[in-house]
Amino acid sequence: MGNRYPTFETVNFYAGGQLNRASWLRESSAYLNQALLRTDARILPLSNGNPLIRREDSSHRIALFPWKEVESAVMQTVHKFSPTATTVFGPKTYMLEKKSDTEDKYWARSTQGILAPYLSLAFLGILEEANTSPETMDFEDTGGRAMVVPKGAPCFALSLSYRPSDLPATEKLPCEELLEHLTSPDAPYQTLDMRTVILSGAMDREDAAILANARTLLDWNDRYMFCAGCGSRQYSVWGGHKRGCASVLAKVTQDQQPLVKALYSGPEAEQLCASVTSVQNYSYPRSDPVIIVGIISADREHILLGRQKSWPKGFYSCIAGFVEAGESLEEAVRREALEETGVRIDQVAYHSSQPWPFPANLIFGAFGIADATRSEIRLDLDVELEDAFFAPRADVLAAVEAAEQGNKDANIQPPTRNGHRYIVPPPSAIAHVLLAAYARGDALLQGKM
Picture 1: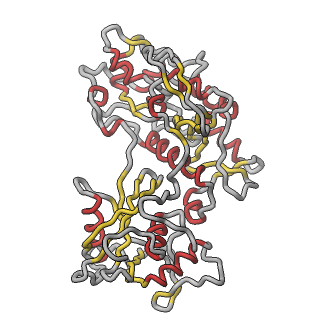
Picture 2 (picture 1 turned 90 degrees about the vertical axis):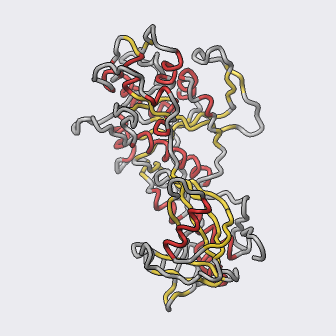
Picture 3 (picture 1 turned 90 degrees about the horizontal axis):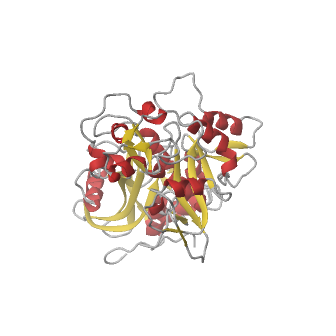
């Protein structure tokens, strides 16, 4: 029968993880420090967004380290800004004190879960134990409010390859040295290329969900170095889930400590940056919306396959593109279909979505029923596609089944296009899911399937 992908019920690769993100705990430096130092805490190390795996492990299970494995590298970095620190997060760690005339809310927004600027470390959540009740705990920095803490192992992500732009080329950070040690030729670990994972699908789905979270979050922290509101340096707060503005930190902190001096050297700002006085989209992690559409013929018996010239020989997929400003998902589906194939879409039906951590996309999968009067394919509009055609359901099913076997089963032959075999994406991609849902009749469409 193959995999079934019903509308509204399908959980795609990179989604569906059991990690409780526990977002309400990100603002508590006391919790973050306690969680990181717990014996059951797990730290996911990444190198340029790629996980580490054991060399002899063919299952590609990602490496999750206890705190003691990364403690030396992390604390060496913290000590660059606070030589006697025993913790990692928060204003106390870096000897920061509030100016007497600073409002508490601006101090909190600037320092909750603050992290050393040479570290890229983020709290992902809690690997919650099944069938357990959460605990209620008190922390010194929550204003007397008891915090609900799910039972389970706290999970963090740590970039071992992060290099801030102002770091001298000759200086090597402790985390970089740790990466070299862990992945040297005689060491037990190697880096796993994420693109390879997508093609092979050879990764535990729970690992993939954690990895998608970590990769997107650390990539965002590593890219966004300067404040869009005033141009000052940014730094990590809220355990890696918010970027603070250094001009504000300098303005609200007394007796400028090494961390503040490393981030801000200009004169004190006359006014607080808008990044702290109001909610700004440049202070929080981003997800870029993308649509992908299976264009179905008006008679429901064919679905459109297209290919770009740069793709591997014989590789075909669905049509996809970014959602533009001020555009609904339905409008994006219709626009992309028209621009890339010349086909006008009548009905649009949602199927499922997929986080795509390359680096921060959220893909909305849909089907579009072609207008019977405007379904002729033309590729001369935005000339993105090299070829496109409507494939019959039986051929699509054959291509899907071949892909589910890695295109290696001699008993399942992919279909042909112009006398040449063609293949479709693997099950780890939402394009495969849409094609399989169509071919097997799992897609919920208006009217007769």
